[in-house]
Length: 199
Image (cartoon, rainbow, N blue to C red; front, top):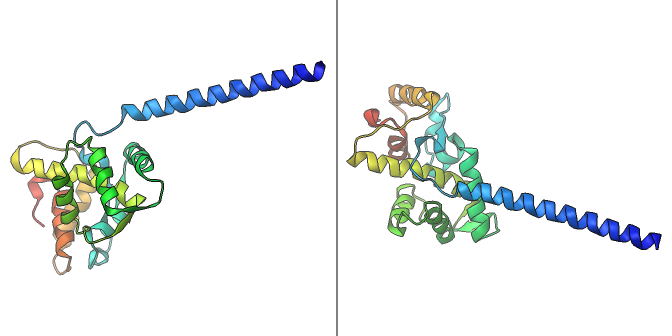
């Protein structure tokens, strides 16, 4: 009888632990659901840095630049990784699935044509697949890209980190003599302050 009571008590404790774990998991998921997708475009969704030797930028593709010299915010990174896990569990993701992730990240407020144009702009439509970390960077950069497109039509200012502004001012002054790929030059124009777009 004592043995049976101890087994019942252990079962109750295990059940309570499982319930508490499930409750905490649901709470964490609800917290992430609140931040499901960007409500507005934010220039601070991704932070850019530049190397001290600008020659390191030569022959870099747009995607390579984004992988090496940009950092998405932790909140955005969590959201995008959750979207990726929802669609596919692999680390390597097919290009069409990557476009679906970007569309879902924007709650389908951006059309597939917009996303295809973004991938063309970054010169990555020719790739077969992307890493999950690359998709995170692409989604965060997409906010900056669409913000840049919007700024061509409307007047507004977007807030960027001070270090990024300083880096790009120095880049603008020291860029002479450095041969950049066309796609990287286009990318850098979208990352600059609206008043200083020309590189």
